[in-house]
Image 1 (cartoon, helix red, strand yellow):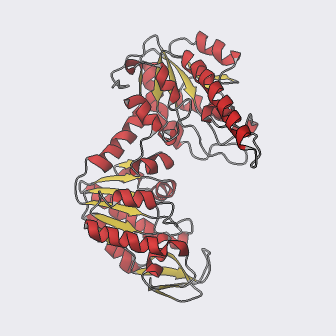
Image 2: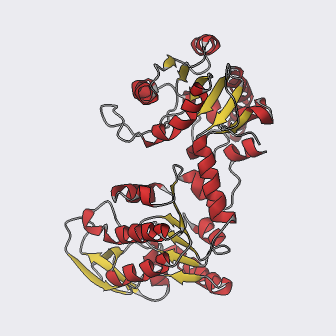
Length: 419
């Protein structure tokens, strides 16, 4: 498989799919440019070789051309970070794009307009009524698929090489993230530096494990994590279940959880997971106490209670000190760590302590030689909020993509390069 490090882009044009889907405030100013900065090494490598770059990305979830999702909004910031006056094409497959891509000289960079302004990027028809007849839906899907081929061919025609550096969209079989790779032979398609790191991190977590392996799974719903949990049960030594899921497990075991969040229709599933963990010899670690509140508010009255003895009008919003000690002990004795999901409502400053204790324990274990992977939006927000991102092994840029990889699914954006 071709690698970006070994490839010489001199005199060549590279189509680079990046993930510049960055958050913007009400004034359309970037509030977090992490994703842009993450792609800089790849872009600079191509320019440094004497190649030229065609940047393709999406922004938001537009249903057609929408000014508030135009990549023009981030053009200056990308230019400033890259140190190059990035050109802009006001369409991704129009004449403007074709002319500018054709005229690109070594060292120059062109950014295409939002790829998702076209339904062909995602391959999904737009404008259909929810109750549209089945034959109408089929006809619309067929039409989009046919035009998607032309859309993809046009994007591919701009370049001599294809570089995928957009791990955040690797789980989507979109035109620019997977289909376009078919138009380049194995020697002219590759991962960017960021994508390489992501793939290596996943490989290490799933297939190159140094034990003991501990996974920390948070979040409010078992239903959204069931596939991940079941896949991990065949891989981990310790599985810490935390966050809102705690209370579904606790209630399933006969505990009193007050008005804490709970999936009442998943109580049997929780018991089944406990049984599976025991059968596989996995140490399933659950909270024993909680920081409780009399309302869902940062300024609520708080107390501590055993997790199975929460008063009726109270709810658990974080783990308690006994649980922090238990989690910390397990984490510090681990050699491979995956963290996905906080221990509580970390957005409220009064309920960040549990998540902070987990982050600090992971940092400590990493310092002692463990490999630690932080993934999923909330966990990444936590590790950044606590200023510990530089003290863990790797912080993933992909939420959905990482989770699907952990579930054991093949990611189209990765398969398109690896074959």
